[in-house]
Structure formats: C-alpha cells, structure tokens
Length: 451
View 1 (spheres, helix red, strand yellow):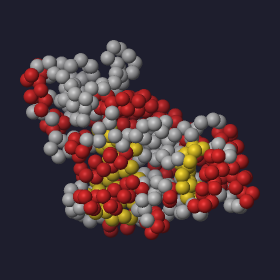
View 2: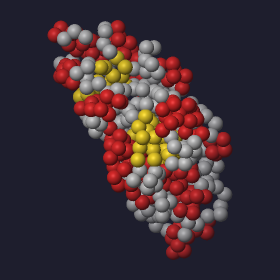
View 3: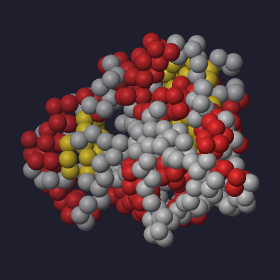
View 4: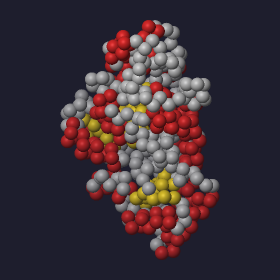
C-alpha cells in the first residue's frame, strides 16, 4: 500500500471494481488528488473557481450527487488481487480499495475538493481539526524535534504544543510574536527546528500573519510552514503566499451548520503520502478516520462556501464599523485602524472580505458576560456558544472558554483580555433586523454601564 501511495498516479472515475488484470487500462485525465491542470503547475485560481473546476463525482446510478461508499472493507474479484494490493501494486489510484481507514472513495472525493480550495497537490480529511493538527506535527517532527509557533493560538493547539508533545514525544516549542519577524528568525534554529506553525488569523485576537515573509524566513532555514486557516477559508490562501501545509477545522465555516466535527490536512502529495505510509504514517497508524457519510455531507456544502463567507464577512465589517462609532473597543481586521488592516488587504482574495469574526473588548469578564447575556436572552442577537461559522451569531468570552488552557501570563502575552468577547457573525435574518437587536442590547448596557 505504501508503494502504491508513492506512485501518485491517476484515479479512474468509474464506480465499477475492475479485475486486477485491467490495471493497465487507459487512465482518466483527472489525477489522484487534483485536476491534471493543477498537478502540472498548480497555477493559482480564485477558490470558488477552483472548486467549480474540480472533478464532479456522479452517483452509482447516474445521480447528480455521488454515492456514499459506507463500507468499512472492500471485496476483490480474484484472490491474487488482494495480494497485489497489500504488496502495493494496486491501490486507490486505480480504484482498488482495501479498508476505509486507509482510503475511502467518498472521503477521497472530499479531499480532492479541499485540495482545490487551498490550491494544494493533495488533501486528506480527518475526524477533527485537532487530529489534523496533531497528525501533521507528529509526521513532521520526531523525538527531539523543535517547533516555533505563534504565542496566540487556539487553546487546544497551545495545549498540544505546550504540554502533550513535550511529555509524550519529546517535541518542544518556542512561542513567538509572529508580528515580530526578527523574533521569529532568531527562534528558528537551522538544522533543529522542523516546523513554523501559526494561524492565518489568530484565535481569538484576530492578529493577521504576514504569510509571505514568515514563509520566506522559514524556508531560508529549511523549515516547513504549517498554517491553520480555519478562521479565513476563501479569504486567505496561505499556499499561494508560500506556506507548505494548511490545516482546517472543517467543523467551522466549511461545515457551516455546527453539526459536524471534522478536519483536513492540505499540502504536497509527498507529505500526504508519507502520512498514509503503512509503516510510518501518522494518519495511517493513529487512525483519525473520517466517516464517509460525514464526507458526503461536507462535499455538498463546499460549493456554497464562497457565498456564505461573503455574507459572514460583509456583516462582520458592517457591525464592526457601527459598533466602533458607538464607542466600543472593536477588533476586526477589516477596520482601517486595525494594525494589520493593510497586510490583510494585500493578501486577501478579491471580494471575500476580511473574515466573519470580530471581537469586542469589554475589559472585564463580568462586563463581557453581561453583554452576552443581554444579546442572547433579551434581544436574541445570538447564542452563547463556542465554535464559529454557524448561520447564527455565536459568542464566547475567550479567556474563560476556548483559551482557558492558557495560564494568565500566556493570555497576557497573547493579548487576550479577560473581557474579550469573540463573535462569529451569522447571516440568519436580515442585516438590519440583526443590527437592531445588537443596537438594542448595547443601549441597554449603556444605561447602567457606559462604554
């Protein structure tokens, strides 16, 4: 199987299982991971255009949607075929499957779409965003390895790098302010550092990473750049700007319905192949396998991701602008007074905006909780809940929720105020209808506690 993965040849579009004797037949023009056009040059396309150009899988009986391959295991027509599959002579590149922990046709289809979205050679979809991150780090680093990472990260990722990897794997991390390029350069030790890891837009402080410069610094020292693009699908395309690997929590914007837990690793085919190696692959051996029924659901949602992101971003910018005029301390990269506004404007894909998340700094946790309580329970503007990318607005006080894994000193270094309220702006209802709910809540707050 490992040898087959390294072939990275063409996968046939047929839904029929061929006999082992037919493996030398002409191949379909689409490659195993991406379109032939992409695999030749990886010429950059608008993300929505790239998704539209990705190969469309039809159903077994001609349905416009692909069939769900729900089988855990797969049969063969001749005994010799199974031996050849385990020897690595036949594999999913020729429509031969063994077991769904290895490869599954429905999950592979979603992987091709994710590769198209991020402009990478390959992608593999996993059972969660954290499993995608963990698997990449374990593949790129060995015992004694070193990571340089942003000091402002999702709490789960921070805990992985700070506590789990040093204890379980002897992999250590140096945390830096990614805005300070000299600090990043000094932290990377050539010959020792394996990975530079950061979020394209940081959770929760909305710091924007200078992806081109950070990638240049890392590559000069032979270091792989891994970017979490969960906050900015469609908006930013890290690989276009020099990053090597992109990870996602698909549970967020790509799902869009807060009903699925999933992740993805997007990157070079060589990396994805190594992660699926039978003897050394982190994905193969740790087994964070995506359910094919989940993969089918997600593949149906990707085509309208661009439309959803544009509306998320449009409303976030409008609300951020209006709240700023009311005197609130609003953090949003789309505002001209945000320190990274010019940077994100220079990097963002045209017409997708600046992200669907804004933050309001209420300074204390008490004030933050009071604001969220009014917004949910009195004006019905949104829900107090973690996560993001839902069609309703979701709110949380980051310091006591999704960043609670950080201690007080780490939160201070990351710029996370005790009263920082993260809002994932939804698109349900009309813009003015939801603004009136927000405005009413802010007026109620101002009556007793002026901003």
